[in-house]
Image: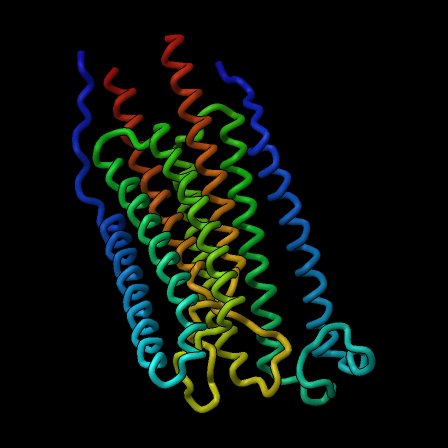
Length: 169
Length: 172
C-alpha cells in the first residue's frame, strides 16, 4: 500500500522567513549597486581609490553569490516540508552545504575587511562606521556554521538510524 | 533497539558545548566581579586597570559602560542556555531518535535566544556611541539575524516533520 502524506497547509512562519530572506538578499544587492556606483564615480575622480574599490567589488559580488546560494538552499529545505518527510539525507547534505557557505562568507568578509576596512557609507555627526558591511569576521557567523554542521550530522545520523530500524522491521 | 551512536563530530561538538559553557561561566564571574568592583569599590580599578572601562579615572566611569558590561553578562547567560540546548539535541542522537517535537521546541528556543543576543548587541552598539572613548568596540553584525532565522526555520521543519512521522506511525 503506498503511503500518502497529506500536504501541509501553508506555514505562515516559513513563508515570512522566506520573505525576510529574500528581503535581505535585495538589501545586499542594493548595497552592491551602491558600492558599484560609488566606485564608478570614484574611477573618474580618484583612480587610486577606484582600484581599491574594484577588489572590494569582486569580493562583494562573491559574498552576494554565497548569500544567494544560502537563501536558495534554505528555501529548498522549507519546500521539502511540503513535499513530505524532511528528515532525509538530501536535507542533511543541504545543511552541511549551508555550514560551508557560512564559513566561506566569513572568509570573504575577512578578506573584504583586510582590503577595504569598514565601509563608511554614512557620516552623521561623527557617528561613522556603524553601517559597515565589511566588518570582518563575526562571532555569530562561526556560531551559525557550528550549529549547521552539528544539525547536518544530527540529520544524517537520525536518518541512518531510522533506515536501519525500518530495515529490521 | 536503541543503539549508542558514536560519531566523532558529535562527540567533539558535545565537548565544545561543555567548554563553551565553562568559558561563559568564567566570563560571567569575571565580568560580574568587575561590575561589582566598578560600582562599590571603584578605587580598586584606579591603578593598573583590570579591564578597560571608561576613560581611566575611577570617578567618571560612565553609567553606559556599566550598563554595557551588565548587558554582556546577560548575553552570556543567554548563550549558556543556547549551548545547553544544543548539547541536549546532540544527546538525543545518542538516545536514538533526534526527530522529535522536543528537539523542534529546543531549536525554537535557540532561535529566540539568538534573537535576544542580537537585541542586546544592538542596544550595546547604540549605547557605546555615547561613550567618549570606547575601549570596548562593539560591532553590530547581522549574522545574529541569520542564526535566528535559520534556527526558526529548522525548528519549524522539525515540528512538521515530527508531526508527519507521528501521523504516519499512527496509521501503519
